[in-house]
Image (cartoon, rainbow, N blue to C red; front, top):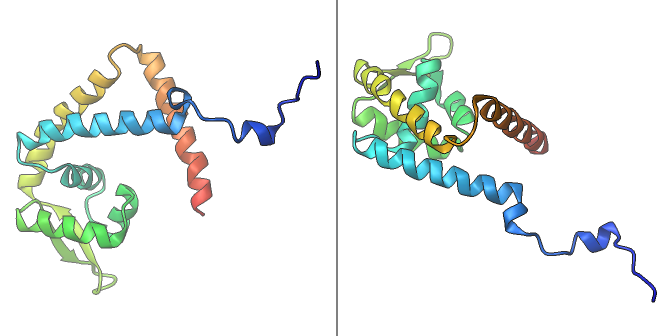
Length: 158
């Protein structure tokens, strides 16, 4: 009986077990994190899209629209509607930048700062729930490995 060698070309055509697909598992985990967080944010009248912007602006108040879209990882055209909503409900204000009067810096309002401070424990709670069966060391390793995946895939975007 002659055995066939399993070449890499053959391996590439084998079905991918979804339970072993890193991308698929990350996608499911991401969606579950988002759903859990959105449900908790909604109780406070905050949309998930607003939360992502609030978090970046909390760390770096005064980002431009372009900078914020890069941080949040959405197209500039997508972030425009989110910024308009946030401005309309009093979470951010746009201020012309002194160096380039065509650009606006996005700044959190006092209302947004208060809301963000109140929602940080909720975000921590959702993260804690997602990693509850992991030790602190395992969580740190998982985060490091996930960052490695992000870095590897960012290289393909260039």
